[in-house]
Image (cartoon, rainbow, N blue to C red; front, side):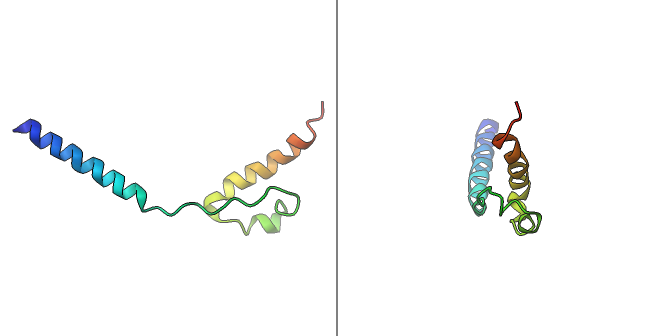
Length: 69
């Protein structure tokens, strides 16, 4: 009896997690990393959910173009 209760609780939790994870909208598309988009005034226009990743990509852009070795 107790095992059946645990199994039903486990199935209920798994179903709740599966349904809850599907309700999130997909993130907005990442803008192209180029000289124009990496200007500070254009970086402020990027969606907050992807702004940290975009800023890191813009910062790393200079290192990849000319590593200096």
